[in-house]
Length: 598
Ligand code: ASP
Image (cartoon, rainbow, N blue to C red):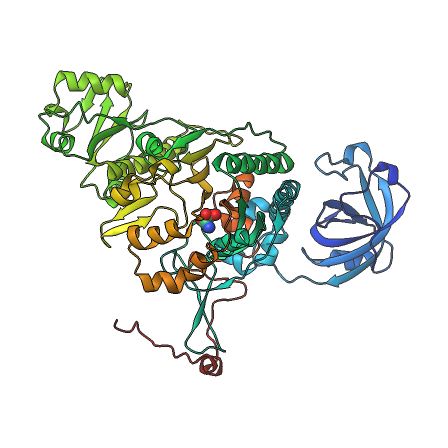
């Protein structure tokens, strides 16, 4: 079976040629005794005409159902001016068929394949028939976009001297990270691999091995609760380099993203990207991945309320480590009671007792709390928050981090409401890239009563903060960086510790991991670091998120060929599923109905 042309190829200059085309029946119409079939392949659509009076040819064409696979031979004919279809690349010609072969009849479709209708079809049904859903030109376009992005990244990595190295996905369990998928080892009964959460440890070993510049389109696995921007298996552009500092990493990633945006969307990204310290991001935006496309920034009023008659604010303002902060959700005073309740629920999910607010309507401040405010307090709020009629002000009085989290969430939700009401518009081609830097190396965990790594335990401290490791770990900044785009974390990484003594100190003295566990989990790394480990650092970009941003999609399910649902299921292949007792016996595994008591 040989086609002579793709379905986007023929033009009036081809008139008179005999051609063979293959593809799917996109649509079929019978008009005035003539049958028209729009024939579609991966590249486009060509109109095929079946005229009466050619034996069974037209009858067979009339019986064709949408999405059947056919092959036609015919003659290219220029269309008359009044029948030209300017929407199609091939709209000035049609092929008058002389031969038809049906390679595969398509049954009645489970949902319409027309893009606008199909987009509204229940996602579970589309995932069950993912091969049909993918066949829609819009979705094939997303696969092409993903391919183009991967090609741009690979080209840039190659140009920069990186070697693509594959690392094992069957790794060992490292329980302090995300929850892992475990894989029983038949040859070592009772023992388990874990599917790699990331090639972190292997890529560091590659630096000790002298690879100097490594990258990999790495498949990673995390058994976490799923959301629109998370899949249980995903792809990272995983990178590690020797003999570099943070500036080298910023320049490399900016180059990769610049090339990717240029080669996929034709967009020129201005570089270098702005940078913001973690502290500033939390103070102004209440989150470590700020969306800087809009304002609604957080303002601090801790000093203002130190002597306030409003007890709640006064207490917080005088509690060390606590703050009184607010945002002005400009123009949102007319939100509904339901919307307000939802905001309150969000604040409470961040540990707030409630959500204090002031509505400014009809020249009046409407709020149960304003009666406690002095004229000076009111004036200061009005000035700093630029309050005008139609605004609503939300407050948080809490420890610094919690107040940031509360107002960070309220800010995003307010923006979403303003967007839905048509009062905030964010251009689809606005790309606010941002480096977030100077994260703390450690965060105190109240539950475990010990420090935990903010990124991972291999991140090096900022050199001048190293002495604080012994005295005040909370103050140590890490050489960690995140790359953020429009409020989405695209990736993160760090300069690593390459000195075995410092690494051991971080594990044992700071993170308080017992010595035997350090030995069993990381002993081989510490050993490797004593055999000529170069200074090194790296990063991982979430490739799925990069493609989703390029495609303007909020769900990464859209840009993964065979995604899993929020419950981690592949509805097409029906996985996960039960296995046979024999398989379990071989693995020496017994399943239990209920969760066993610990
Ligand atoms: N392995 C890290 C991650 O997956 C990234 C890095 O530090 O390179 O988040």
